Image (tube, rainbow, N blue to C red; front, side, top):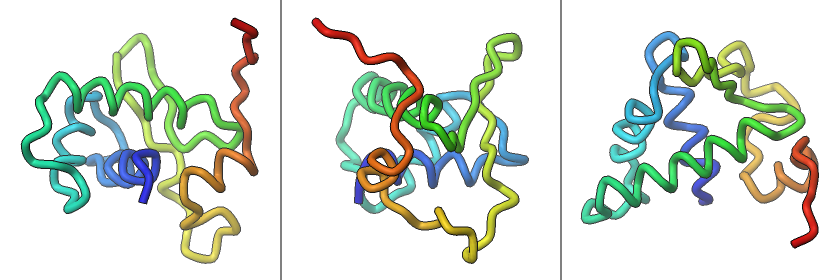
Length: 105
């Protein structure tokens, strides 16, 4: 289980596929894989980083609407039969690398 998988699952459970980062954090807390004692600010940072990674994938499952300041889940129309359904975040990242340009620091 990866944090990308957990955040993607939380985003998929947003009402009507739309919500804030805080909404996604609340849904993530329902996961049995998340430490209940994790401070809110750390959880928010983790969710933020995961959403950014998911957003920049070639086959992104989320998109950020900067005007409304909301995250939108894009794969609600996918079924279990879809070729990419159920891939964990690490395999997914290898198959669909980030669209962000790599930087040499």
